[in-house]
Length: 305
Image (cartoon, rainbow, N blue to C red; front, side):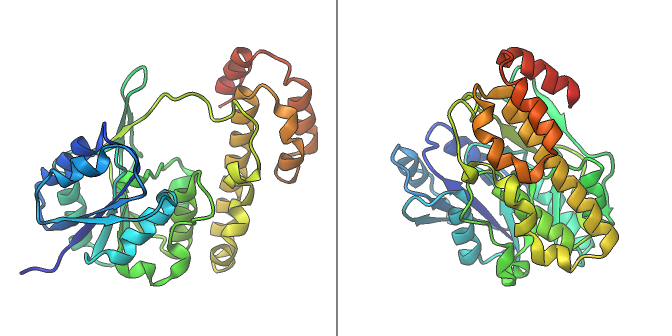
């Protein structure tokens, strides 16, 4: 029996409307040498019953108390038997050739320890495709990220032995954009990244309203500490590459602050939080224009981005 090539990790929490569709998309893969590790993160709906109704020896089932997607993914990584880890969210899907395409990429390029792909975004006003301009083996992930490469979790494959470095596990202390921290650390340590330009994955977005309708604290803005969380990886990165990534992180912070300004009704409560990461003059402008109706601010924000 061949060793397992892919361990597909699916963190599951209250996704009874979607989990069967997601699992079916994995079970229909043309490349079949995989296991599926479903980590139920304390679901309270019918998700568990739906999973238990699906009979396939490749499915492994783990239950734990609710701790968030990072904790669930980390548990899956630790339990994985495959050579590569493939991540998939419980409400998203893969097209049948997804794993086969990434198997082909990695088997031909054994020195490449991680890869991702383009994807389709559905569920909004219209379907969108997200795809980088180049494909194959990209020489420098940092250059690609700065140039517009978007790395989405359900497209990512990582060789399991990479996680011998425990700093590459998902950060369980944050609950928003925790995946970006992992991708940026990988970009520092493993510049080469495989990329499939096609869109063999489907990201199902949920229109559940803005996250900034109520006041939030520092823990809700992980971009504020992203640079400090990358301290060791940045320190080990060549200066030119490090400068590029830091500039990109600063831009993420600025964009995120503009998004908060463009959607919240009370921007001034965040002034003290945002001072360390944005120019004082710009912060003052945002503060004194926070009275504008949110719909106008959204238009200004979109025009500027």
